[in-house]
Image 1: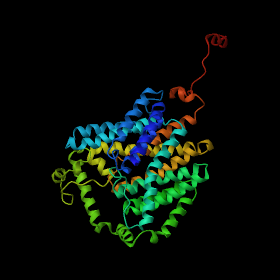
Image 2 (image 1 turned 90 degrees about the vertical axis):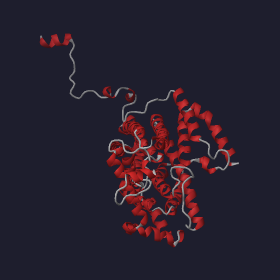
Image 3 (image 1 turned 135 degrees about the vertical axis):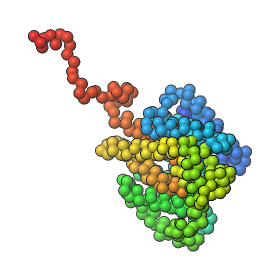
Image 4 (image 1 turned 90 degrees about the horizontal axis):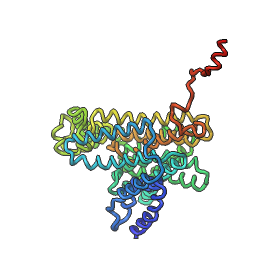
Length: 447
């Protein structure tokens, strides 16, 4: 029955995608992040919905009058360069056939990113993208929070089966990432019942993060709270909500949760931490031996790679990097890591520029708030990602790319009406340009 409902929903939206490719982008994001096919148990369970929606959306995009090229921005430029470099590193991978699957998935994500930036060219479309990201991952958070309350926290919260956040640690970090955007929608929505629903969804999502039993997600949540205190214009309601959940924590989770979280203080003696430390050394060994191109996507997961690049203290067999920075370093070498870090810096540069330009613009207050909440999300994800292999998570890359679309829209809002259509070098007169005299005026002046 679930399969038929999902199939009916998709069939009803296909004609809308052909008429408006931005609806296809939203559907693409929904299927990518939420993985609704994993919630059914019939013939759609293993169906490649993402692929077919992408094909229909791209066809509609090409046939439409929408812009076909993403606007030039530090983020879009570095996305292109990083994607190009991953193609080179995959060609020279230690085992190309093994790295190809993740390369193919990453390239599909990059197509989505460029299409989203190109089409999200006004406030309404950016708002729609934010709503779709929140609804897609918020479903996991609300469902997980209810599960924790119903079971007394005795079972871990996991992400959708077969997705990039199936693991409890990955799911916890992804949920931390969307909390600031839930708060953004809460404070910018006019309808009271929507604001109330967003506040409730935030509370359940925080409980779901706790229910993942992920120590990294808990640290990321604390980092988000600290940055929110500094960067937010939205009041203290989220902090009060978090404090209330903290007070009620003993009744939400069992004693083993506190026992696991207490190991954060003694990480050096924790067996799991020692295994991760060994994986970090192996990842660095791969990059040191192949500094330009690394080993290719997920090469350190291969057992023979772990043996070949083993050193005292590193892992002998194949194991994930468990650090997104070392993950990129081992996959694509020092060049790839430099491009990746520049991409993250470009996203921060975009949000800082937006905050600065919109500080005294009430009509752009929505963009100011969105940029601030994006910074909170970025900090939480960059802190939590230090212990997870989530460098290519599509939800995170969507948020990074969204800063490019937001920056472009804000730039256009601040120009005189119609000026954005002209080349940038024609938008403002040269401040040192002197008025020219006609030949007749010149003769008259000389006389």
